[in-house]
Image 1 (cartoon, rainbow, N blue to C red):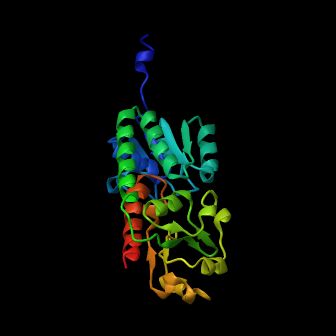
Image 2 (image 1 turned 180 degrees about the vertical axis):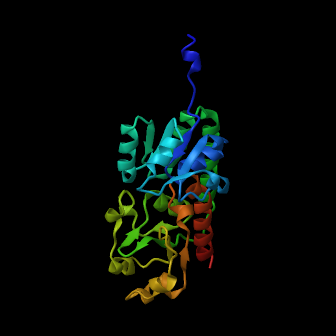
Image 3 (image 1 turned 90 degrees about the horizontal axis):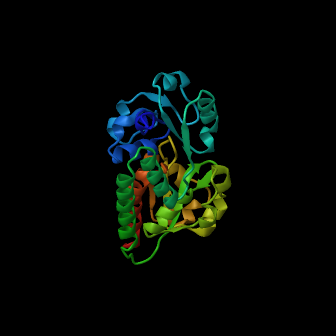
Amino acid sequence: MELFSKVSFPKRIVCLTEETTETLYLLGEGDRVVGISGYTVRPIEARQKPKVCAYITAKFDKIYALKPDLVLAFSDLQADIVKELVKQGLTVATFNQRSVNEILSMVLTVGSLVGCQEKATKLVTDLQCQLEAISKEALPYRPRVFFEEWKDPLISGIRWVSELIEIAGGEDIFPELRTGQSGSERIVSSDEVIKRNPDIIIASWCGKKVDKSFIRSRVGWNEVNAVRNNQIYEIKSTYILQPGPASLTEGIKQLRMIISQVAKK
């Protein structure tokens, strides 16, 4: 039995994307994080940790030098990184959350991986309560929203963004595309956006500042309600395109603020 008494949860964790890093810090387990993505913004204190990857590239020597007992990755986009790490004998858990419920499930799983199930359950309950409270705040009407994830080609919002728009009191104009996991599955035409005539345009161009004048200058968009009424907004990608706590806290907060001020006009 002495052998089994030495079993413990991971103590040195490398997070290849921001959302698992933020989750561990919210669980009070930030000390376990020894390596992060270079794109990590939240929480600010995590930025002091060694940066070992971008999104689809990694500095393998730096990862190996950190001697992690667990690596947390995200989606098929990091499949090549994961394959290399596994070949070197590292333990890797890869998430693929695309919906609000899947994000909450990711939080629970991360909590279980580090032996903090109770704290993870409390965090998920708190997040659910916040989302439910927002959804119950009635608005005069539900503005029609086009969420622009990229400018050329035009890409509509991924599933969790579409769901958060609805929770915040809006109506996604491309709900049928939300389940498309890759951006190529959510490409829309300029003419179709004009046809569906959103009241609000919210853009979040990953890694690039949104150019509102570019959006306004598109052919025919001067007839779109959102453009005519100057209802074009930006939410930084770190708050809304990160499938983790940021989207369910700051992301939904910004969505609600935008949607409510339009609905109440």
